[in-house]
Length: 352
Image 1 (cartoon, rainbow, N blue to C red):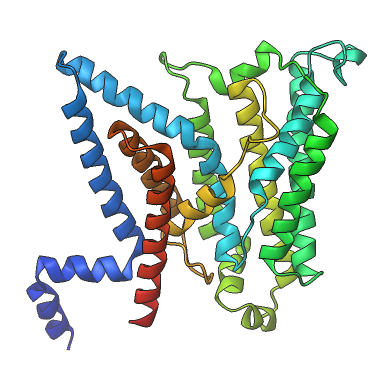
Image 2 (image 1 turned 90 degrees about the vertical axis):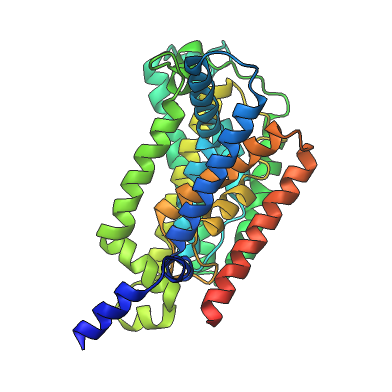
């Protein structure tokens, strides 16, 4: 019997092998799409280059890639948390607004002007930065806890709970900061803008480190296994002895903390935060990255690596459309098409 299966595998054509992996392994299909988009993008860049040496072309490609990764690092970090949320069967629409609220809290503590909360007490420099970052992380975790409690104990649908938080966080932040003009110290800007080898790649390193850590959490820890179990079947998970409510709360707390990291990077990178528009659309971009990366909207299936690939696909697509001169509004339409196509492929796989 084993010999027959072996012979059958040997006779399988490359096309059949490709189709089988495309249907059965979301990470494979996502990786193939990413490679194709990178090839197309590279071709367009070479076609648009104005001559120059091979070294100059390579430097241009490297700079372009660093910009893509850096511009998508904050959303990419949020998408890591969104992966856990969606795998658990939930959704979080509040991440863009909570980023603004957390950013306001961070700037309140690091404000270097005479009206600053800590500078008025004579606390400046690194100590003020550490307090500001810790305050932001704590506040992010608290906002995540509120989301988790509303969903786990209040029995609100995740869509409704996080939609309400989205409206509350941004409007309250705008109300209390409408006359605020905090000064972000130059030293704080080094968190995101410190150059290594001539390039400001710190946001990329933060994203990569968190992706590696959360991959291990998702695959090698009890918490990670419980998240998958709840997403697959919450009732069965509960009967198996898993504290479903506690796991759901922790998923949203984790997401809130990751949003705080993104907020710190955002404030450090830009040196300010527009409370009206900062983080706008981040929830959709994060969800799109997770879905394009192969995570099932129904929960129970997905991966951190897939989300990173999904975020890169969206980043490369945006860059490619910019190189091709596509208007900004149509770029969002292309993103919508990709998300719809990803969900349709998931449905087709589930029905087959």
